[in-house]
Length: 422
Image (cartoon, rainbow, N blue to C red):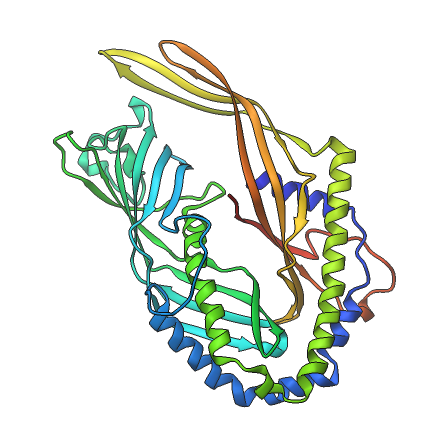
């Protein structure tokens, strides 16, 4: 699913002419009022970073901060169903639930308010996820000899003592959470917007068991090879729901821009609001063109390649070949894009523009066929709402532009991720 959305956006953006917003962004960050704020910021930066660090250590993962959070879903429920291929086995995981939220170890904060950005990095404590699994495997895939059951080379789901169905405990250690969040002046404090937090360097241990089988659990290190949407993305949804409200509450508690900026606050806010109005208008222009081109090109519909699962098994002592096929699939709703307007321009190593484009409703229609000793065919429809896609542009310096050019995905569009859905 993610690859089709990413392909669609990359293809469409390559055809839409970029507006001349580089000059506005560059002029804002080089203006006297922003440069003055940047020079004065250094004396406030370290004390505020220390306050943010203390708040994160004391409140992330704990119910200690007086913050009301309206949750759209249970943060401990990660997924009802999840398909994964580790290049050796094809596995379906079901009812994945988080035992508890992890804590932050040694968090680091780089708060660059004049640049509209805050960078955060932290190690996470151990994470435990529980669920059920179904492994689709052939008899020839099973490893019987204990000497050959090397989890560095082979998937533990190939081990003979692992049943085709059972329960799964996933122990995740060593994760590092890094990313940035937009920091925007608002009243006498700071509003937080777009963020791109990600997990990396996670190490997995699987505890695989089947109640009633009479066999002890199989505990093995697991080295998954990603197949698009990884478990880290599912985890990050829950971690983000815990992080962002408490980080925003920290801004309201410790950051008083009236004190930081004094008489310059009104002028800077007006300049910032003017810049963000221009960038929001630009992104909205892009999105309107996305929708228009989607309708003109294919009415917002894209064909999806067929998907097949094959495996051999035995039933009542007889060999049985089974397969599941998803065919005749089409993805519709690509003309329902809209801008979340939570991003904007910021400066790190260079000027960048971030935003989150969402699709109001995406639907996948198709046919599913299961064939073993009998054949069953059904039609299906799957629907997702508010599918969020993160987009990041690098902004060229205005003097490097001599004429209106087209956005090129390999140059201007650095990356895009599916980061949320309902």
